[in-house]
Amino acid sequence: MELYLGASGRSPRDLPWMYVKTAVILAWFAASYAWLVFGASGPWGALAGCLSLGLAIAGVGFSVQHDANHGSYSSRRGINEFLGGTLDAIGGSSYVWGWKHNIFHHSHTNVVGLDEDIDIQPFCRLAPGQKLRSGHRFQFAYIWLLYGLLTLKWHFVDDFKDLVRGSVGQQKMPRPNRRKLAGAVGGKLLFYGWALVLPWFFHPLWQVVLGHVLTSFVLGLTLATVFQMAHCVEEADFSVPPEGGTTFPRDWATHQVLSTVDFARGNPLVSWYLGGLNFQVEHHLFPRVCHLHYPALSRIVEETCREHGIRYRANESVGAALKSHVRWLKRMGQPAAIEGAV
Image (cartoon, rainbow, N blue to C red; front, side):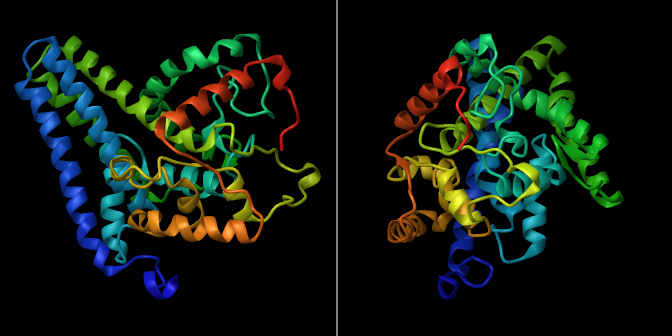
């Protein structure tokens, strides 16, 4: 595989396709923003603009910043850093993301207390090792509202809190140097500028705020649902940290396969839009490989797992993955679900 992909996990012939894809997604973003701020007339036009802009921003997250911040977009570090900054431009912090996602989530996938991505306590229970509350029996119905509010909390609260505290949940994160802190603050100012300040020159404040909330809701719901269909489903394993500081019973690669589930692998449109994140097993095993390789890589990974007797799971479609997530939410909301984590 290294002979084919190169030591960095990227094939030179794929780079032009990444540039083309990035140009298409950024053009989608620019057109949606221009329509919403300068062209939309009436509530239905504005609603369509919010929907399109939210999905376009999610596309930037899935297919541009994600590869770039993993170092898998290009063999050139400068290009990865530049395009990784698109996360800052759309409201997140690439510095915090690097620790929260690349290190903490990828190192301890679905581990209660160490993977912040599965922690929505006290509002929801996503893993057997988390505390059950009486209201959780309805979480399968109300969790979608929380998903939609995810990015508002992320953009205005979480990044600042993590930077000030120097931690993500229970995991310690080194404080950024001056250059990285300036990048984080500058990115926030850029985001607030195009998302809130500029539209305010052309529309009443209440319309700007309402449009931003609707766009953020679409974005948060899309991002959260895609993540949950790969990790918080019936087919995925969950675990808790071993007692006494001992090592985990399974090796890292096996843990990644068992705690992660692919979906809709045969749907090229889904794969294109999600930046290959429906091939989540392959991404967790090879995070520095460009997502254009995931479909071919999945066949190799599945066969290798079969040879070594390791369970490899994939839901056939988005609908199947979504149903599995809902069933898992219902199970985790019931008293009978207070079993020990795997």
